[in-house]
Image 1 (tube, rainbow, N blue to C red):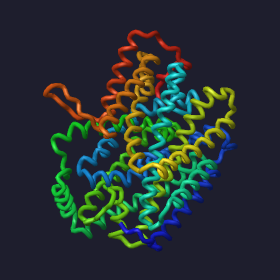
Image 2 (image 1 turned 180 degrees about the horizontal axis):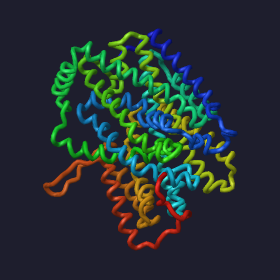
Image 3 (image 1 turned 45 degrees about the vertical axis):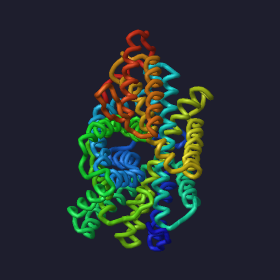
Image 4 (image 1 turned 120 degrees about the vertical axis):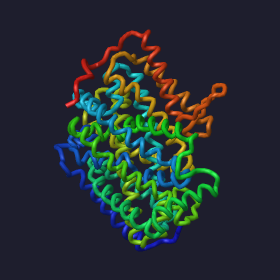
Length: 498
């Protein structure tokens, strides 16, 4: 990948970065309420986002800059196995359609801001609430750090060296998030998504044309995998069960993260969420087209020092500098949107489920908003320090654990919407078992997402998150048979969504 400065690319990049920075600060005046000094307004945009705003916002924080970098990189490295993200982003939307409107209604009716609020209200358990909140914050931190990985890749491609450009970019992000709250990423998401769509549509039309067509692209990719002795453009039989388990359980985890739930809670109505569940698969089409860039990297004969460089190097090699700069700006802006929502989601959890629960139960709405603003700044600083002082691979490894960890909150949050069978203590012990066993298995396998189960001559390889979640549910179900009923804080969590 080229490392010298391309001034045309840099100029276009800076233009769009300055544009979204201005939008971030202007967002404080967009649909401005009487005050932003309330966590509902700062952290959830007043719960008034309609179908299109929610579509851009959820799409913006679900399909991130690291997705644009990492999915093609995984396809470049492993071939067909890297496409597991496609079925998982298809499976997830029927789940969103059926379940998330119910969760939204519970949060709206009881003024809940976070998943941990819902769990506390359902079970009346501070311990379970704290477990869900802590898991959300811990799982989100490396996810934010990985947005910086995506941004760092394009900054390096622009020829800028050192940490200062990255620090400046995220200081800007921190300040306009502090000022505008969730309105900032919601407004910027419009620009980000339009830019990403332009980049992808141009790429899938022009790149194959320059490389001899899609047939030549697939042939070159298959030849590259055969030469290195691993991977392929088709799944091997032994990969099918691991692939399916990774896709299924990733779908269950996707909307457990604080940033995706923040988009859900900020929606205007249950119907808004259902409409988005039907519209959001458009992003899955986009993701599939993005993934093909990994194969195109082989056809272009790229020589890379790191798989994450495949997309920047492809644009540098095959497009003029101005369009490469436009593409890099789209990727960088694609980091700002999810990073902002992630920091807001983590800040909401800290404020509502730690600060208000244990430090200052009498905190005012304005006080809550102020604590959330400060926390969102600290979360971004923490993610920045991870990237600066720890190897990039460390952040990636932690993110693999993050998916495993956030999945363990699924039973406590989702099962309580439909049944009162599960008890708080049972769910807390189940969470602990899934968290500890899953972490141990992933750690013992070198922080890999897959684990082989062996029993005599029988063996199967599964996503470690599925193993941990199964143990979690089994423990919680068995213990719930013997424990007394909980005392929920509200009367009915099972009202139909409207």
